[in-house]
Length: 141
Image 1 (tube, rainbow, N blue to C red):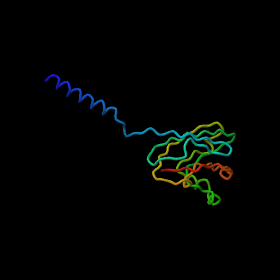
Image 2: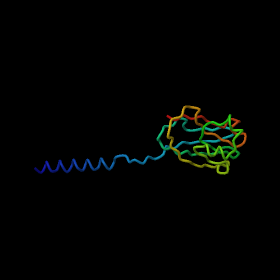
Image 3: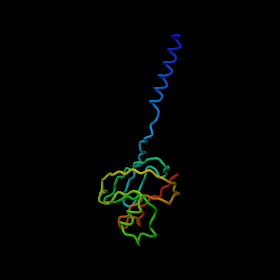
């Protein structure tokens, strides 16, 4: 009898310990390192997953101020848009005033739907930067 009680208590203890160690519903964001230079954008990843939280850590390693916007490509329509309209279209933005040379800023974003390569990009829309190639297409699966 004593060994049966011991086994029962041990089984309950194992169950409780296992339950305590189960993953929680809150997920830490995956870090994405973004580097801005004249005139390029590099990222530690270019493919993302729907529903996964990401923290974008953006560092300006250039000699001039930059910005970063997560949005659909706008090159064809950019001439007809002012910066306020572009800001409204962006999924996330760190503005030029916040990214002087040497600065690092972050933003968090969780993608809610898939996007083929070229449907979304990380880009700098400071005057002339986008045209000089400061854009990076991304994919969301």
